[in-house]
Length: 501
Ligand code: BGC
Image (cartoon, rainbow, N blue to C red; front, side, top):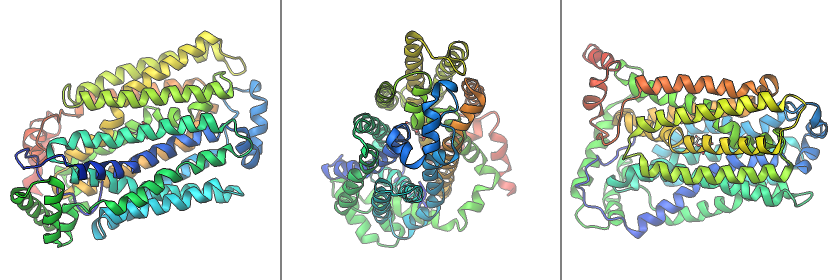
């Protein structure tokens, strides 16, 4: 993610590098940042389904919930309740621009440390909240943590990884996000029966990984790229030797120095992003974020327990179903890691679009037919809905989930890579915010039609992937212009104009 610029050390697997224990430790510590993000995504749905929490902060929602049989779809519709979930993403959006600056001026490591400090204060405020303002303030600070963490961690991982492992390590971040979501749903499940402060424990749980990140980040090194970028060339070289576990790092070091010098020559990367030759990665990178969120995934991730209660599960059954979908999410992300460099990106995007579309349509039909506004769902139908949600999550987890992050990280040329990626991150946070803020009201207004709404988006994104997303599997990251854009039936027109600009 952004940080002035990313100077990946080329794609050359020829650089000598071992996967050292030290790099492994650095990767594990940094990836805890992804885990905190996932935990925050997963925890809010469970907490907002807990009665003690609703009674304390949202009594009106609690009253409506008690009369649930009167309107299945609207019992949770409350702007403040949604703000509790969504404020985090709005804060993250704003923070990612500041984080981009700290990443390049101070380095990746201090940016991660800042993230963990925001996380810790945010956790303290949210879990100790005496009123709604403290609660929302806590979520905003957690959002700053997410903004700083999501900027620094993937960048750190990409820069520290030996080139041949970079793709896989990129998806490790997404894997940690899914593990965080899963842990959150297990925590929700157990804390929901601790009265009256189970929700405080659930929100406070994020403090543990935040502490691990804070103390762990004292052990890790700064990336060689960041050191060289800030003219600490000797230190950069020494660090490179340490993380690669070999003495002869000259070739990779030279390539980093060159990459840094080249990137320095581009004085205004944001302006460069507006030029026609930047159009393909920019349009694809930004639209993938919109599409990733309009698959409807976070309607499920944030609100799974709420959603399952809506379709007729009891409190505990709903939380348990969220644990099940969370596990499916983790396991299917592993499938994604395995498949992404074998089947390629396009196949996964298209295959998953068909899978997700079918699930959404059938869920919509079952709910429209059998649930109605005041009815309840039979046991069998409810089971079928859970299974379909799982198959839907599976599809997302091996495609639009990780690829939404991977494709923008590998399609921008070096000189605009971090800026392009920063825009993609903010765009993702923006649409995540939109879904978090709007979903429960949309559910209330559209009823089961919400599933047809997301289905329509899946058709659009499937067509977009079919016609506009080229295959980037195995393409060298710095050769993408010649081997991909210039050969693509549509994007090549922007390449031709390059010399006119
Ligand atoms: C998305 C998140 C989502 C998560 C689910 C990520 O790729 O960006 O918004 O909650 O996947 O696993």
